[in-house]
Structure formats: C-alpha cells, structure tokens
Amino acid sequence: MTTYGTIPTTSSSPPSTPNLVYISRVKNKVRAGLGTRQPWKTMLDPRSFGIPITLSQAMSRVRINVPYFRVNYAMVALLILFLSLLWHPISLIVFLLLMALWLFLYFLRDQPLLLYGHVIDDRIIVVVMTIFTVAVLLLTDATVNILVAVAVGVVVVVAHAVFRKTEDLFLDEEVTGLVHNGGAAA
Image (cartoon, rainbow, N blue to C red; front, side, top):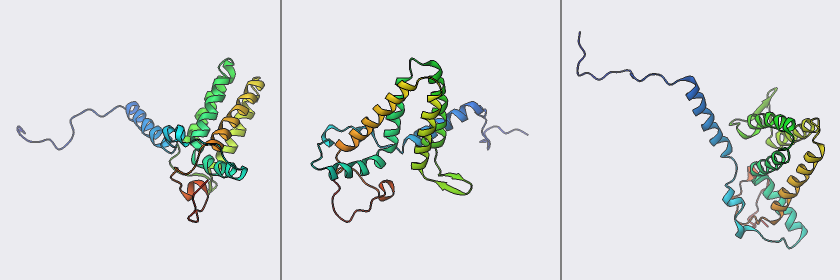
C-alpha cells in the first residue's frame, strides 16, 4: 500500500538527545529561578538614592529594602566572597561546591522547600546557608579573607539598604512582611 501524498501523523524528526533536553531544562530553570530577583536597573538607579533624615527612616528603609532585594543582596555578598577567594584555590573549589548547594536550595527552587512535611521559609534557608558556607570555608585556612569578605558584604548590603529610597518600589506585603495603612513608605 502506498502512502504518497499523505500527511504523516507522527513526527519524522529524530528525538532530541537527553543532554540537550536537560540543558534546555536547566537554562529555563536558571531564568525562572533568577527571575525572582529584582532588576539590577531598579536596584542601582542613581535617582533612587538619598540620605535618610532620621534613624527611624534609615531603619524603615532597611526593613523594606532587605526583603525586597534579598536575592540581589545574596548574589552581591556571594560575589564578594568569591572574589576574596581567588588566591586560595582549595577554598575556591569548596566555595564552588557550596554555590551548587546555594543554587539548588535557594536560587533555582520553583517550589517551597519541604522538610518532614513542613515548609521552610526562605529567610531561614538564607541564614542557615550563610552560616554553613562561612563555617565550611573557615575550615579551608582562608579565615582572614572570609571574615573580611563577609564584613564587606554586610557593609555593602546595609549601606545600599539605608541609602536606597523605597517610595518607587512596588511593594508586596508577602515579600516585605509589612502591611501598609495607606501611608507612603519612608
């Protein structure tokens, strides 16, 4: 029986290799996972910086900016830590392994982390991963570099959070944990 002129019902193209499918899935997951960060253009907009007038205004900015830019801040702190380890190859290898753990547990998750049937909050994951990362890296004999990098990272994050105005942020009560009573944020 001949089938000339008929339209085939199945695809005649060869199935894509598992490696290409896996790479495509990882690329999509990276885009989706890092999509939870705020745009760098929003974070670093020069018009959005100003000196706080009071200490309470500075604290209010920190309380709003830290949850809002938490993924960006984690990326900045990890970049500072990475740069401090460039001259310590063993520490750098350990750090890269820890980065894989960060990617898996924090940056690329698309569902909440469940542990024994309980949802683990992102803030707890960040604190535990930070302590674990610093503790494991301290075992690699790069103590001074690590402590200086952590201190510089904290200073950079807090300085940005204090000087970044919050009026132009699109706040979500779930993200910040704040409830707005009709008033403008500091």
